[in-house]
Length: 80
Length: 80
Image (tube, rainbow over all chains, first blue to last red; front, side):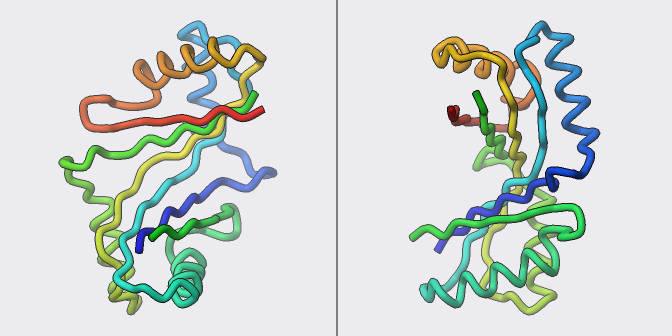
C-alpha cells in the first residue's frame, strides 16, 4: 500500500520560504504570481493491506514525526 | 486561479532525507514502513483566468526555478 502525505504550513503562519520564491518569480517576470506557500510532499510504501490500520498508523506518524502540528497541517491519501 | 505543484526526486536518485525519515519511523516502531521519498508541495495563487497560458507559464516556472530538472521531476494541477 502506498501513502501520499501532504504537510502544509497553517494559513495564519508566516511562510518566509514561500515569500522568497514569490519574489524570485516576480524577478523572473512572472508578475501574475500571488501568494506562494511551500510544504512537504511524502510518498511512503507501507507493508500492510489493512487500510483502516494503515490510516490509524499514518495519523500517529504525522502527529509524532512528519508534521509539527503547532504550525503545520497534514493530510494523507492511501492507494492500492 | 490556484496551482498545486509537486516536485519529487527522480526514482533513480538517492533521497537521504527520505532514508533518515524511514529510519526514524522504524525507531518509533513503525516497521511496516518501506521506502520513503520526500519532495516539495507548492501552492501558488495566479492572477489570471487563461488556463492554457497559466499552464504554459507554470511549466517555465518549474523548469527555471521551482524544480532542478537534473534530479527532480515536477507535475502541477490547476484549479478554479
